[in-house]
Amino acid sequence: MSAAEGHGLALASRLYKSRTLGLTLGFVCVVFGMYPLDPAWWVWAWMVINAFVWPHLAFQLTLRTANALRSERRNLLFDSFCGGFWVGAMHFNPLPSVTTLSMMTMNNVAIGGPRFMLAGWVAQALGIGTSLLVFAPAFIAVTTQTQLYACLPILMLYPLALGWICYRQAVTLARHKREFLALSRTDSLSGLLNHGAWKDHLEIEFQRCRRGSAGAAIALIDIDHFKTINDTYGHVTGDIVLRQLSKVLRQNLRATDLAGRYGGDEFCVILPDMPLNRATEVMDALRDRFNALAYAQDPTLRASLSIGLAPYQPTHADSTSWLNDADQALYEAKSSGRNRVSSTQGSWLRSV
Image: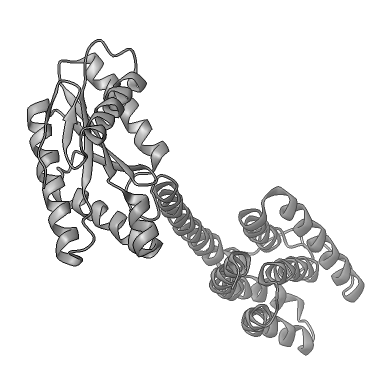
């Protein structure tokens, strides 16, 4: 099922409920508007069919069409046509007529906006014209007290129901928006922040450090000889290694730390309010855990990490210069033998 079909069926389900309620309440309004006119039997039969058979028939027709959205738009225009027909049949009795037309218009504008509202008005006009051909044209200028009370249920309950449906739709759309935003900022393989999202957080952390006295460190993490792992064991194994590192990062960092996938086999971490010596200990412990996990799953794999650390310095002109320091530290770790942690203010070297 395509997204458009799913949207159309969801719309049909919502409209089925609102149409059933609206036409049931509208039936009460129209019955008291038509009763003083002593209409023919077929008019009563059509009222019953329109109110109690049509909502179920419309829903079944939509379920059996390839384009549910288009089908429901046709159904709504038919609703408007019928509303106009009953207005003419009631000889334009003021309150029942205004109630019927306004409820139909409110429904149309809520579903399709101004353009569909105009289409609904055209359908209402056609319905009025049809009723004028069937019934003798007349105008009843006075709404009785009984007719007034008959209109109150639809005036009170239908807007409440439609408002609730619109509210639930707004809540659903807001949730989907949050989910899409999270997906757009998440790396699909690792589940961590993607490159762009992590760089945004780096800029925020840089500005925070610049405004206050708090320190922070950033780490760039590279999986040693990752190309060799892919070439020797295959890309499926390579993806497993990437997910293992992601898991180790999530399990061994603080809730305030921000880990991301910088690209390929390179990961990145922001460590707020953490001095360099503590950051070095944390990264070295993380390196040990990753190495042990990789060895436990496949002793022949021998996966290891090279990590470059850079603390925030007041001399950094921007977040890019801070990141460049971490990149230089990573280069030092890789060029001095790999499987170690190095920083721009010295290094803590430890081999497996």
